[in-house]
Length: 394
Image (tube, rainbow, N blue to C red; front, side, top):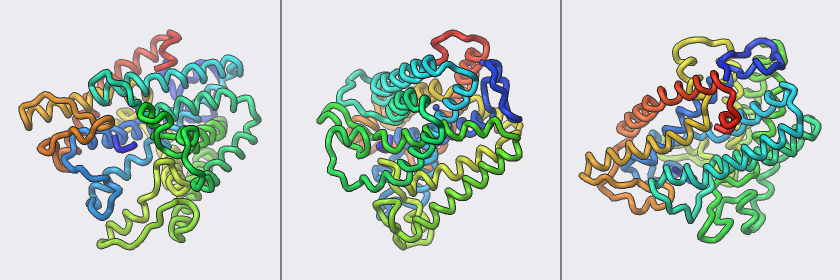
């Protein structure tokens, strides 16, 4: 990985706060699209023959950069929609104490999965130290924090979330330290043992923002869609304006490049670790617009995407194993070796002869997504039919 969220009934009209009203289909569709894009990023890491960072515009092609860039919507989408899910969960009349226990325990479960099961999938081995704290780490600890935040007035939560998103780049000059690697700057929180790629700030603020805006699903559909489109367009326009002046918003300015496509890439080449203000405006704006555009849409594509969107955690964990298995099969075909491809823990051990160019990456991505469909459909059906407590954690 480049260092580096029961019943199928849907709700599209005014939200009804009842236990039977389980899902918002537009959220599932957008989340499903995010899951599909996420697989592209991980499959590219597993099967590519290009040993360069896509963000290095002195070496990378525009095609490689944009293959990476489209996946930037994944982590913000995970965080925002997880927050929306928490907000909808609370609006079903949940007891705050019960909700806090659930958020804390589920958050810690996500952290555990990230450091163990996901790590095993990335390396196909059991050497868990050094550990790499990735996106589930950020989601998990954000849920733990949200276990406390749900007791605050929503307006207070909104102010804190927006202040953190807008102002956290003011913290960039603080010298790194172990606790600061957990909170804001990627690095080893425990030297040689725990590398944090996704610090908590500002990811927790993105989840809190989703929690606050969940209230729009009580609104009349036209008003809700108008709000999402206007808010998304405003965020996107703010990104363009702030990025254009090359001032506050991202620590690395854009600059003209050798081609027009790479100049556009430079403009869009904003910082993900940690996500800068520009990064979040660039990604959250289109996500909000997408939530409005897919609401009420029913066709084969949206039904297909919603299958993945209903079981995001199941998909996330399983696709790592499927992607790695495809990569090992490729190594067997290319070099006659059934070998592991340790893209996170030891990328330097991947042999020079291994990998495919970008068209092959896209073919492998399509294969992985297709292989994921029937397991996800089965698991989504299981969650729709049953109410076992453990299903709430998957």
